[in-house]
Length: 432
Image (cartoon, rainbow, N blue to C red):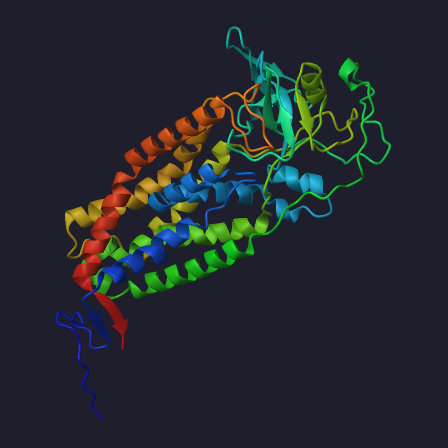
């Protein structure tokens, strides 16, 4: 039995009787962009207390350079806080949802080169490395990589005097909620600001949720991307080689899969919780104040940082680069890196798009760490008001991200334009 189908002008099968390709409409190209690029970027893993501005910038960067969306997922996977059961404080700390007040002037920056042998600290006067013992009070040393971002949402309200800053609680800190009526005083500490008792109900609830909508979206996008990659086989690769527009989805598919794993391994914390430490008491004695913080027991055992492996941003970046190499392997495996009939412009933009996305997995982290700011005396959280320095931080962050995307995102924008032209040339195809 024969059927007669009326097809638009320009319809072709590219020599395959089982393929039907019709000229695309503008919304066909837009749908391809949205389903294969835009929606993937929205699944990027967010940090606890991450602000709206930083989230928006992360999504835009992941859209242009998918490697930047791999870095937070890699760091979250390394920390895997969801695997810690029965200890809400330890889980929140592993997720980087706990912070503390630290002295910022004079700065005592600690660079953990080898946690098993000791800590190299930078002297503020002559910038000479000094080897310190690996055992020290966890609230006394400010990590160079542990500074809390100015755009983060902090639970409660506080204002810090000059000379104090916010830092994440080290992973090596042993934390335990204070029981009712228990005096939180370290017997080995003689600081006058710690002589008063502090009380709190035992084991308060730390608000956290699993972002199942984002998880389901990531799963759906990863599935759709795999379908797009599958459909890229055959005539599309034979026509365009490794520059085939269907293969440009590979980095976004890998990003969604990695984000699925990261979202399963980490609950979402809408805010970062302050932990009361002797440094916070000292800050309050100098005119600062804090409310809504967590009270923990501080004793000689828990006050000492023991040798324990910690994950630095560099290690997360290395893992991010290794994971970002996966799309390159997929493209090579499907196309064998053959040119076929693709032009040099098509190959140049599509491969630059992929390669730049790989190496920006590390460079993107430096955009946030390079923004200089000081918490002390500048910002009051909890009531929605920001100081002039808070706005200066936002402006600096936006400008640095614009510069970052302008330098590295040119290939991505050019690649999207080339993909649109290839779709217009190749058509929207259906297997029949």
